[in-house]
Length: 261
Image (cartoon, rainbow, N blue to C red; front, side, top):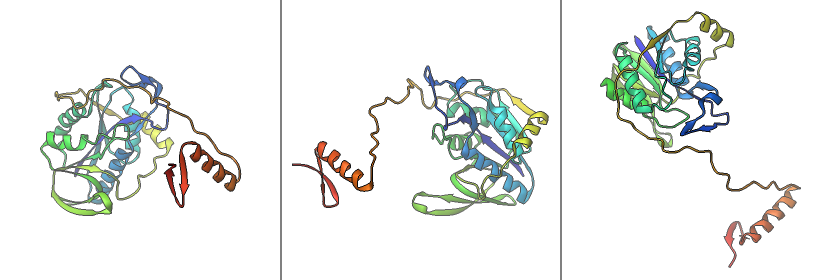
């Protein structure tokens, strides 16, 4: 079973994201593995452990920081790592999907995993675009994948807690929402060891794609107000809230807040 996982490194959303020009100041932020791609890696490794095969992780290196997450993927059970030397922070999902698809074609995959979306842009188009370029069926919002022969059984989640199972003839592309088991932990010592010994294959970007979104302007949110902390006992806080509502032209009306006449 030849399994490929398309991954993405993103700015850590736990940090402040300073703006430089029309994008994030990438020199001032730390990059981490996209959380949905971490789920994809786990699901891919689970399939490998179940039916055998190899797992290849591949991503676009936009700013020279991809090796760290590739080493992490290898520490979590992937067998090979490939990076596309894009070196273009402005490359959108359409461009990245085209570069990825051209590289993935040469890997002859039986199944391609991708995170259902990336936490930094919530775009969610890499998986469907890969499927279109590779001429494979696509199912997104997936919570588990099982493989038997040339058929995959896929559990998909819908809104409202509704789920469904599909039988799909391979090859296919899967957009993973969550793996059937929590992602395994990779010790820092193992990641560092792999970083010293692993070989990451480099591939030049290939193929042109029409742009999806064009950034015209990016800026930090404008601070429009401030929070006022109310201190005191619960009764004192409640009384202050009532007075505050009255001062704003609102009144408490038997369980409802309404505007005073």
